[in-house]
Image (cartoon, rainbow, N blue to C red; front, side):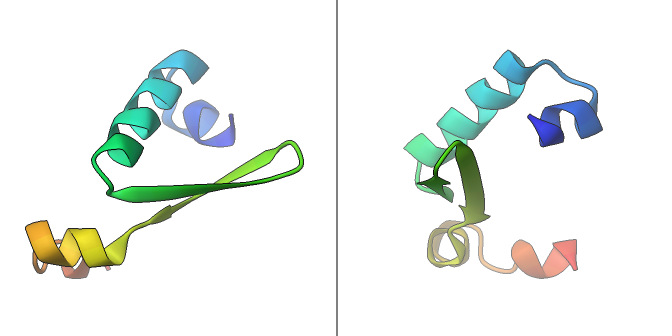
Length: 57
């Protein structure tokens, strides 16, 4: 997992956190072949954490 390597964490740790984010609806995962793509669910962020995404830019 590229992100795990970038963050210097194990693949299992990254997978655990991505699963939690997906389970609460903050991310959306799609699969294309062997690749998995994760994107933020901006609707959920704006509903429960209004303004949070603006602080990341």
